[in-house]
Image (tube, rainbow, N blue to C red; front, side, top):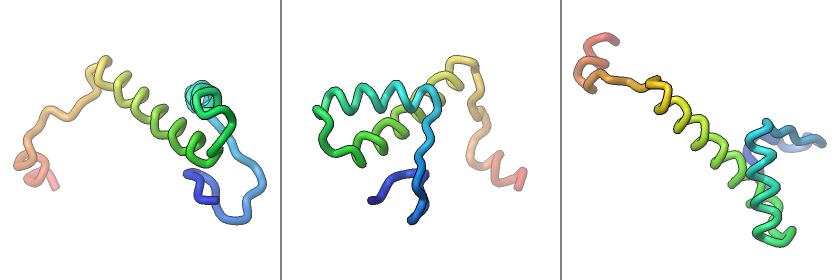
Length: 72
């Protein structure tokens, strides 16, 4: 099984609250099939939610690539 966040041989899986919400939606949509895909999609959608929240809060990079290179 190739699931994001699970190392080979691990027995448990953990979800954030947001990941869990998306996981339930995915399982419902796929009627319990393709659990691996449901888990990976849920984690991806949760990341998109976090990114959107950061954008809404104004937590974005406002420097150009050249400015960032100059800082390095």
